[in-house]
Structure formats: C-alpha cells, structure tokens
Image (cartoon, rainbow, N blue to C red):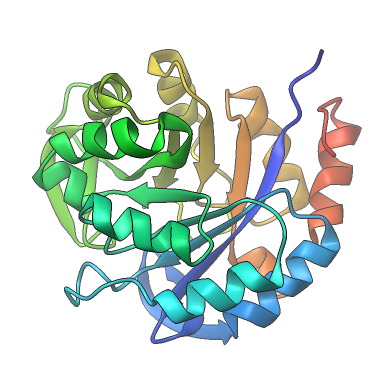
Length: 253
C-alpha cells in the first residue's frame, strides 16, 4: 500500500494573529488563525501546525485560548508548538485540543524532556521541531538554531535528530531557516540527509513558492510537506498542491 503524503498548512502566530516573514525576520500579519484554519480544513488539509513563534523569545506560554478556538474549528490533527517546556504544558495543550506538540528550544536546553513527554503521552504525540541553518561549523554542514532562528547552538542537526528519536520523538519537523519564506523551493539536500538518519516521519518545511516545489521534497524523502505564506496569500490552495503531487505520481488524499 502506498504511503499517502500529507499536506500541512502552518499557522505561525504572534500576538494572536498569523504572521509570516523571510528567514524568520520582518514578520507581517497574514490574518486570523481560526478563520485560516477553517479555510484550510475546507480545502482538504490533512493536518494543521500551529506555532506560537514568539512564545520562547518572550518567555511566555502558548496562547491556549487561540489553540482552543482553532481546535474547535477543525477536525483534523493539530500540532501545537511554541513555549512547550514541561509535561504539564503538553497536558494543558491536549486539554484544549492539540493532538501533537512540537518541541524545540526546551528540548535542546534539557533533552530529558523528550523522554518525559514520550513516556507519558506516547511518541506519536511528540514532534521535534528543528530550525536548521547551513553552517561550516558542524560535521554535516547544518546547525540547529533556537529562538525562531535567532540563536545558533553547537548542535549538528543530524546528530541532534538521531538523539531526539532515540529519546522518543515520533516525528521530525525540519524547517530550513535559509529557505524559509524565500519561495525558491525546499532545501532538498537537508531533506535527504534527514531522511537518511530518521526512522520516523519527516515533515519538510521552508521555501515553498510554487505547486511544483512539493513533489521534489517528497522525492527527497519527506513524508509530509508544510507551507505557510503560499497558502495564507491565496497563491496556492491545498487542492493545488495535492493535484501537483498526484501529477508527479505521488499518493495524496
């Protein structure tokens, strides 16, 4: 049976509004998260990813009220990230409707968090969010960043992905900071490298600008493709992307 590729719109939220920038900078408002979630659900989105992009920077919790209203508006899996630091945060997010949580900065600061979440809620509920930049400082040529791409760590992206999977991560959300918002296509090299080291599903993120950009990401090893600005602007619909995938011989719902 063929694996069905998931198409996932991403709602990057700051101060209760959906925003988008280029390389994680110069954020501009794109609309109301609940209205956009409803639209994407109607278009046939397979999942939604909700990221409070300033939660870690501002040292505040994810906006639970917005998560609740978004979850009430759609009936597909919802992943929520931003400011998730403890198993209590995960429990509260699940209470308001999240199916999965995305963890980035807090897991880097304390890797044991991954095991704690996986042990309590299951690996299927845990997504490791990787914001990755190219860097000559690491063995693979890719370094992990935190705080919305603003701070580089000393972690090699591939080494960290391996460790996180061993600790219980059930999925990798791999976002290229270099490609983010550029609309020049996904970083295919990064996707291939992640696919080679990952025993769990890989979600490709960063760089989508045209319907033809998605199939190469799947061919490179992505199990799901995620985008934001091309959907928020109305440049593409979920249907456009799925049609392009099918035209390339890739199974999509």
